[in-house]
Length: 347
Image (cartoon, rainbow, N blue to C red):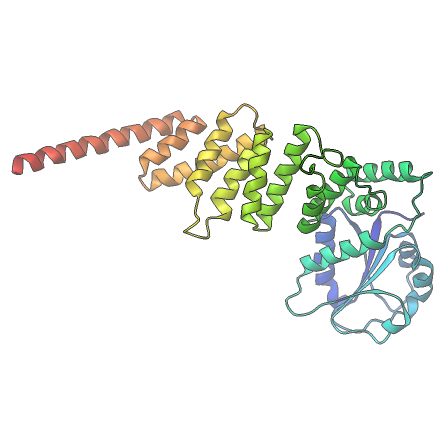
């Protein structure tokens, strides 16, 4: 029986890259069974290949002799994706049908992991979906999703996809977001929203639309598409999404900070204050906003910007720090008045 893991075979000199690739794939909830290529036939490896959903052959440093794996390729070829990762093409590769990824200069392991996930999703589980098994496969995809097996869940979700099935569309978008494929996640979240004057294919209740808009805003923030991020986060705020207000503050504070002409840091911190005062915002957003404001207030206090620090200390309920700011503000005013009197007498 095929299981939800991939087998990774690597050359000894590629062990460091293999370990790093395994770590990234594991973070994407893809279980990896890694084996170092040896001169002798390893029966455990052969069985692992037969039962896996994907076989990744990593040979960046040197040529790779496929002879030991010929039989396993033939039996596994119809059951899992075989992905060959190389810097220079092996002389043995022409004999087999493989998905090939060439490592070139500047190609990061993180990008390799994403491409491997895309290949697995595109070819895994060649089951034919029909009216008799669609319901069962749909339910199986939801179970995998709940277990955070997002890549394997995607494989089945894409097979049962229908434009009017909102639940499947949302899970596809969530799964793509979880494996860090922002562009595809944005595409599927977008088709979850109702068209103008047509609610048939999209989310109809405000809570669902708020969640989708918030997720779109967050993804557009990650991809630096700032105008669209702001647009969808403001829509999510109108739907009273519990996390959208914080995400818009984060957008203003961080994403626009690199351009002095567009800087909106103050607006971001003002929104963090609003997060703490609004009843509908989530506890997680409140805690993140509190930490942001405390860091900013401590920095402003150190710089003797007491008025700005006072605003943030009041928002987070730091009474002692707020009192310190007030004392310093009064002291500054007192010194200012004394200086004005001296100048008036001197004149």
